[in-house]
Image (spheres, rainbow, N blue to C red):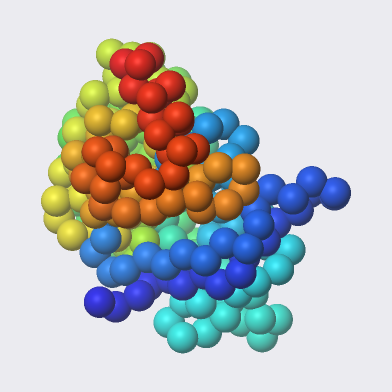
Amino acid sequence: MEKVIEINHLSKSFGNHEVLKDIDFYVNKGEVISIIGSSGSGKSTLLRCINLLEKPTGGEIIYKGENILDQRHDTRAYRTKLGMVFQQFNLFDNHNVLSNCIVGQVKVLKRSKEEAEKVARKYLRVVGMEQYINAKPKQLSGGQKQRVAIARALSMEPDVMLFDEPTSALDPEMVGEVLKVMKELAETGLTMLIVTHEMGFAKEVSDRIVFMDKGVIAEEGTPEEIFNNPKQERTREFLKRTLEKI
């Protein structure tokens, strides 16, 4: 299998607080990986280090055979290859839905406005938001905003899609519509890395589950292995606590 991203000995500290400790991790092309764990275990920080929203303190991130933390590497070019979907949508409030999905393509990828619009419409159709192209974000529900945010990230046609707890800011009745879109994307062979607390979803769509605890990867394996037969006591405790709430 082709590795899209490979992480070696990654660490991240904020002052004296070590949030990530010696992380070794990889993402294969076409793989769907869910990262689970308690709040503060380092899940979101790992995602933010992968797309360089946070600068790792140490280690390597290998993309297409090159360490992107090397000073010579063009980090902007690398970041265009990663689509990011945030908890809080991060849409441009003064742009309508279509424009939200066009602006990055034109500015960063240097696509023509016509080409960018064609691509934007394609992905808005994929997430079921094409009929809202003239709406401003404030006119949309949380679930609709998140679907637009997914379309915006897809419009950049990245190698990997990163999702940072994409349903955590949504009302419960809107969670399903976003998970449905993500499940459909997973079925297309898109490479996806998802930080999530939606255990049923993670179990259903993931090729691999990574359990993080206190800044380390405590355990990883197939959904079957992690949910039905976890090796680590920490994993068992976390799943027991989490699944009892459902």
